[in-house]
Image (cartoon, rainbow, N blue to C red; front, top):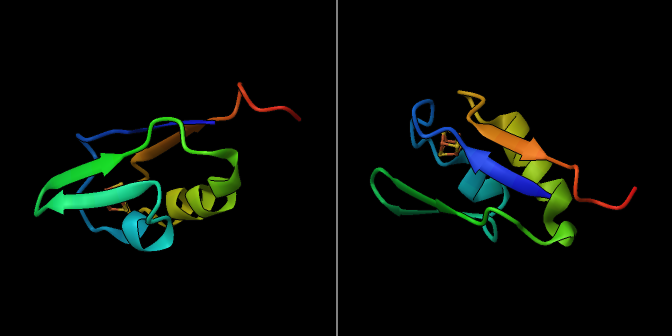
Amino acid sequence: MRIAVDLNRCQFYAQCCFLAPEAFRLEAEQVLAYHTQPDDALREQVVRAAAACPTRAILIDYRDMTP
Ligand code: SF4
């Protein structure tokens, strides 16, 4: 799984950081750090974080995952 955050859309609400803290972290007031290839074990958390993002800024690419 690969993820990308559209930083033009991200408003740093930090819902993703609460829902998937191992994948997303707010490092400063407007600095979002994230793993571009989080472990597959985090998949559920990351999907929930993407769904909760108010600006739909989190993009998930599942192409490299085994079915
Ligand atoms: S929930 Fe969305 S808007 Fe908020 S910090 Fe995460 S990516 Fe940005």
